[in-house]
Length: 584
Ligand code: O2Y
Ligand code: MN
Image (cartoon, rainbow, N blue to C red):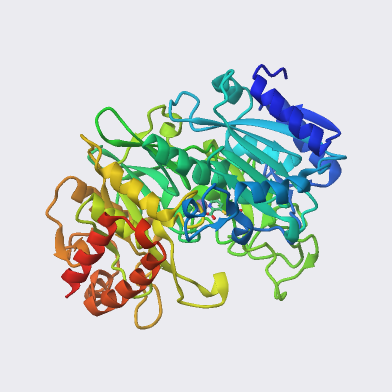
């Protein structure tokens, strides 16, 4: 493919001179190119063909066993000033970062092909979409980028001869964890990733560009880049509402984005616009409109079944890449939580023989599917909308066994920003071994905010100050309250629609809430109960606001806020003091 962008050509030349690939391939994003990438990977053993009768166009990749997840301790924000990275990010000065990591790229692509991957984050026709170019020596990354983004010609056409693109440099290096770095240079809109070929570390369009770099662009340009799903709900009356929701990783974002209404709530329709990232811009009418910058899902596989998420399951049935799942003798993908029981013999995620009862899972707990959004039965046609969808409600959530009620509504945008800033989740045994440890994760952006979180909250507050802004209501949910027996009280999954339905009725102005110190909580009986088996005592527990517990929470919040010193915005401090006063 011939490239007309001189800045891009110069950069590619500089990188190929340094990394010394055997060949340079400019990706056009065509099907023929994807097919040839797949063929090369099948030949080299990087991919394995799955059962093409049942999973046409689907393949299995086994990553290096030491390279199976995002690595936050190797992830740095390389801003000129340390305070611009803030207390929640690792920081390295750009000079130190370049001195330390540039040598790791020297000759790193010898014996490999360099792929130049131009990509567009966001719909082709959207003025809010942004161009990036990832240079990588991994064909697996190039193939995944084609599923996750609009890749190739479409991005180059948008770029024209402009210099306005995010530059991502990626090399597998030697895959050594000691020489693994994921660096972000927010001032120059650059990303450098070396030493990992996995997911969020290597598919640079996703977390690195669409969140860490984009959050800085959003601050500078007056919009929001958020770790939020986007869904549409059509009510039985035919009215359509849109919701963005932010939950920490492993709190069910993909499941909520693909929710199937329960049989006892006929006439509702839920459509998926995005499952992970949302870019929100103001429309001419003062409302916030969301686009999903991605074009695919990089979803966690274990636990996905026809009970938990039939839409996710259906999304993986064709033209998808599975990473680190197990494989049956019939070349079907298998994982813990699959509909079918494990067969007597499997090949596990590392390629070894596995039998039920083994001392380790067959699929890696962070095994993933990369699937096009277009495969998803609940995908909305608005995935391609140029202006995005108008947002009626923003939802924050966390996993709290006792503290937070099932749902509450904030008093204002400023209070909603405080609610997002104080989001937290309790760890589960599966995640860390330490159960119930509270982890603060403001707006679910802790690992993804490309600048000082104090400045980020200030930016949220400034969105609320925009003249003529007609802002969405802000809610908080907790699907994970546990009863005295230790069991979850709320059924979750499709029944979460009952809570979304309550939010919609609040957006419409229904008198369905009562004021508490933390916000508006549903009046008893105001959440649709038909067909639901929740006792009166359980409703009490679900909607309870215990002032003593919240006073204790406030001391945890104070401890967290103290890290930000004078970067803590006055509006957030005001909300903290107002909450303390309401709690008495
Ligand atoms: O482990 C990874 O590299 C993937 S992490 C991820 C993938 C898809 C959506 N969200 C996340 C996340 O960690 O938030
Ligand atoms: Mn995510």
